Length: 325
Image (cartoon, rainbow, N blue to C red):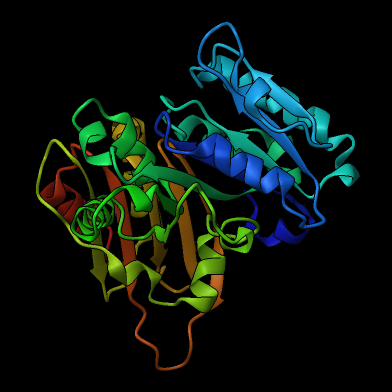
């Protein structure tokens, strides 16, 4: 995703969340509200027979269905094909919404916007929005990895169905979300009702844009210790980074551990470079660009964040320090 081109690119919002959390309700809200914008909708179904398509309101928007939608390489090909078709008439809509199946890891969808050059040139991943069911989230965490992983990928979380739980229960759920992903913005909702400006066209995936209005965005992280869980790890250094060592390390790390690293992001002080080096990744895909110039006298600190599963904090810290000059 060439961040510098963002104004010319069509924004894409990925809606994800566990089965029954309220994704389709949110999608219908977006499509039926009087906001004066038109959206192309791509619905990813699990199973041969599409149902979600029939649940989406009959608005002017066209709905594209990707069947049997375990979003893997085949469906990524589908997604690229659909988006390329949409781009031929992109003047007809203001954004693209992709709703994933409730059992999907949204990572491969996000990776599509890194891998295909045409898609990269014409679209930009604006945000991964995860809808969480406040009543059932904690029990969903015990049923498998999906609910936790969907929160780990999120730029924005809709903590939905807040009317069905007590204040204490809601706090437990919110604390758990923040433990998994301290960087996502959380909006508490009933029936997926949220101001659309809070989730659409926010540039929430674009770390460079976030840092312009929230410079200490990467300060929020911490490490919590349950090895089997998703966790966030953050590292900082006041010495400059050797770019060759860093590229070599990250390349090897993402090839080996990529499936377990849901999101990676960082601002680096590269030795001798006048600007910040801003990068972020999804699984094995990483994208980077030069950010704002360092100011005179400013401490050139590097910050690096990983959100994932089975991460060896000590080993990552050592490897990061080995990249310092």
